[in-house]
Length: 452
Ligand code: NDP
Image (cartoon, rainbow, N blue to C red; front, top):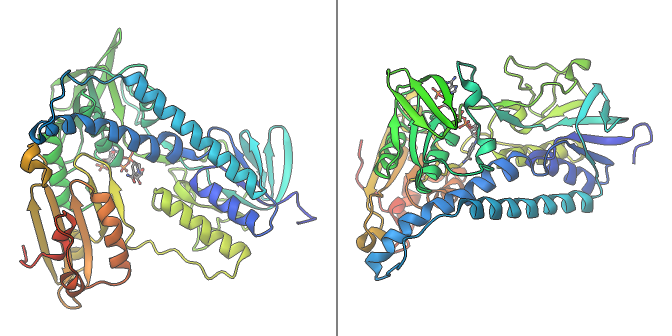
């Protein structure tokens, strides 16, 4: 325990990264405080990954009810969704997880402050009216949805509100072409809402492999999502409870809800960082060095607030690297290459490594393998789903540079592929691996014909 300071480490923000850093530092015998003004577990637990995935499960049942008929099941009554049950059961589960986080922090020995903390100097934090000194401060305040300003933008909601809707609308407009937009378009559509996805670009999920983005768009359309690509929302007007979005194409869309999923911005406003030498980018995010140090030597930052890779497992790994740097032997590192990720769109998308476009832009000589087929469930169950798998291979070294999948269980399958890529797997390794039959995943080890 330190004598000079009240705390060795004061963590602001009890999200995935902040909590992991606090627990690990406390585990190393450091005196640690964590302050959280909103909810324990941060975005992921409260208004992100976890409740989103529960909603994705909920939205997949109609297709399963439908498929069950081909397997001999007779569902006597028309299945009907009770939104309030889904929403409230989800909230109860999140509250359970908030409790788990509370206990994790308490059991680690760290002090938890329920309140908004502000920085009042390089080694000083103000929370709940008291000022504490800390040798090191960690800013792990995450991000917040960004909605651009335009006529009527105040009528749009963000993903935060989607988890607590009083009722589901008949029709919804979702704006954006990234993770959150495609995920919520799939959820709403699956829950029976007429869903329009409005995106200003030509290809959804444009930072990923373009062929896969096109497959996801086609799959979403086949499931009933109305896509409006190369289209912007010019304005939103509200009459009673009804909204109308005027589109750049000249047409209008009536909807009970307009969701803007147009990115997230770092949560640094009003944090008091101007009392220190911490530098912010124009968008509010905090640049840090390889050890997550800001321009102020006693202040570190990690997770969404540094805007490197906005993913929970990345924030957690960053936290472990930071604690090792501060209190361990400093040998831990984080490698931002080949981070597997999934978009829980419908159809689902999993990806690791380079897209075909990135590999070509790298001037690599590549071979591309693609397999596109119907999932086995469809043999009796019907439905529109397809599965697409793709390998991008370096022809010189035979290394698998990228591994991409659209279709059922893509996230589960790509997690394993992530290990293979980390281990430097070659196409020959894939070919020498025995498949699991019958599975979709076996296709990854039986791709013999180059598509390009
Ligand atoms: P993204 O950055 O993924 O996508 C933002 C989208 O909004 C882009 O399509 C962008 O278009 C569009 N956009 C931005 N500004 C405007 C504007 N002014 N008008 C119209 N469209 C605009 O952000 P998300 O909000 O979807 O998600 C934030 C982050 O959260 C993700 O990047 C991801 O890291 C993380 N996340 C991860 C999930 C997962 O792991 N499954 C799930 C959800 C979120 P353009 O492409 O043209 O720039």
